[in-house]
Length: 303
Image 1 (cartoon, rainbow, N blue to C red):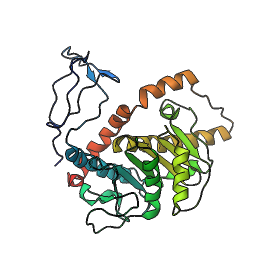
Image 2: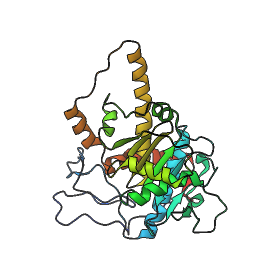
Image 3: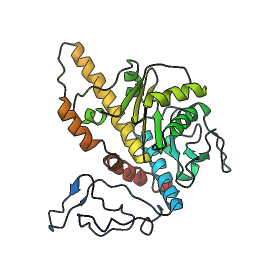
Image 4: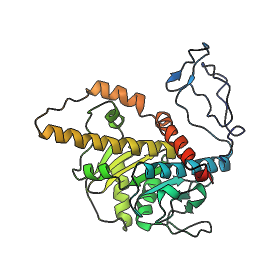
């Protein structure tokens, strides 16, 4: 079962202007930032709608994060992002930030449990006994990004269908609808393809294309990559970007038949991005997928 975060979660600051609801076991701490959730039925004071759990016990955080990482793989499998032995998620270890958890090579996403994840260093060398191997090409991308961006704790890269298709154009996402606005800022394009990533230099070029602040990247002729401060945020970004690529392709097909596209205005896109693209918002965006993956696995992914 998932470890209880009750004793490790920090409490809201005493100076908070918001009176939060009592914490339930395992619930994240209240926050004064983000959108507020009003309990209309009993007139209670507002609590934060978008929240990320915080821990004082790093070992408890590690166990919790690995379970969410396993759930991300199960979710990706359910959404048909699995592609043979391709695709990776990496997670910076909360206990030792110079180490990383990554999926075992050639194990189907739909069968991954928290205990299957492999702890490696920046060179991809396992740091604990394991029966699994790690894909060197995949980890070079992740290692390069983690080296360049200490703020990034998780990176997702799959060979998903629509991400691959849209990447052939080497273009970003247009502001076609509300959900596309998640990528009004924070999306880069790597306009080059250096083949399967065995060279450290290619991984570094991909990290440079991501830049200092972006969390999402379209890899020309390759697919898409997303990142975040939590694996939940990175996973939610990936799902949203894959769907944005699908919508972009559908819109392009219609436009090719003479139907003009209407775009979201810059001011509206900026506002929508600020409302829907925050780390806490994206964390909560993945929450339903996490719950469903745990339920469908009968709790096995938590093991």
